[in-house]
Amino acid sequence: MHVLNLPPFEYKVTQLGPNQLIWDVLRRKNVVLTPEEWVRQHVVHYLADHLSYPRGLLTLERGHAYNQRQKRTDLCAFGPEGKPLLLVECKAPKVPITAAVAHQAATYNQTIGAPFLLLTNGLQHFCWRVDFEQRRNEQLHEIPSYEQALALIN
Image 1 (tube, rainbow, N blue to C red):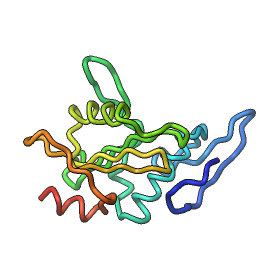
Image 2 (cartoon, rainbow, N blue to C red; image 1 turned 180 degrees about the vertical axis):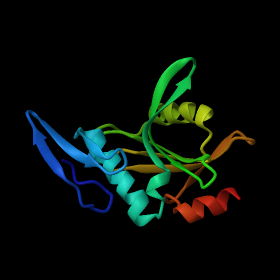
Image 3 (spheres, helix red, strand yellow; image 1 turned 60 degrees about the horizontal axis):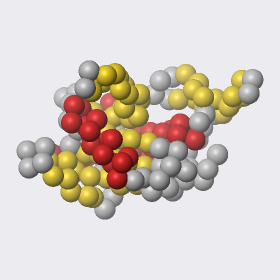
């Protein structure tokens, strides 16, 4: 497991045959601990424990249709009305955050419509505020807390 550029969190890892599993607090089950999953779990705990995103408004690997194909988002945070607020694309620590990764996430977000977009490999984090009307993105210096994100869109 990589040491990431995110605060540590309490986790439960078990071994099942050749696979290590980590307890996923959102899906309430053990999932295979891949490098990308390690990043995803860190981000979930960071958003919930440090930035006050309600766990009940976070979803992992939620399906959505794009170009008549079924895709999955890594993590999505919702606002109090149930509208997408923050779309998160997680990559393994060894996968650099490139323009192609940003394009993939922005493309997914065209159908999801989240006003904030976060790309991370656990070591690098890039967050944007998305203005769909003006068709532009503003890079943010930090990931907004839940309250900050709600205030910025209202």
